[in-house]
Image (cartoon, rainbow, N blue to C red; front, side):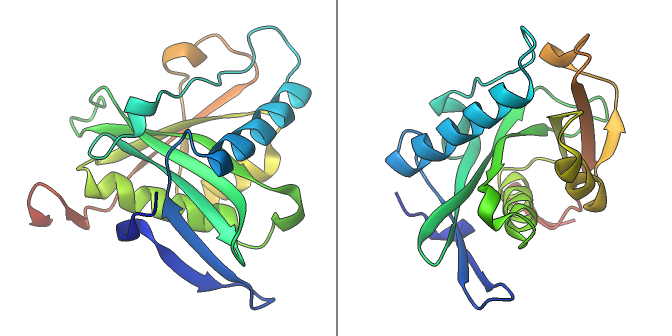
Length: 184
């Protein structure tokens, strides 16, 4: 499925075109990327109960969330999702970033940053004002990325409460253009 509202194109230092587009979470490229992510996380976090892989198809349906795939030169190299969660403590509807992955051979080339920016745009499009996420203590590059993009550490939430390997972060989104009423 190609859905152009989130389609973003840019070029990296090697002039390979980067595109990010909506995809079905059940599509072959999505399943492949998620499989690679699950294998990597299982190897990094072998502790029982340390991994949280669940993301349902309906959570990334239009107007509830989005699943995005990043491609370099047409090759799927990354993915990420945003899903609506319960209203945040600050009163704005909140979303959660899930299933973020960038292939090891293209890390450090801006793919992760581009995915987060595209997911933030999707969150705004469906009226979300805040994003939360969980990553692991051993994912230092991910922590640097998120904190460098304005995410701040918060207390663990939901299924991550009590997890010694979880780091939770949040970011209030600039209003931008939201589905419910233009520019704030």
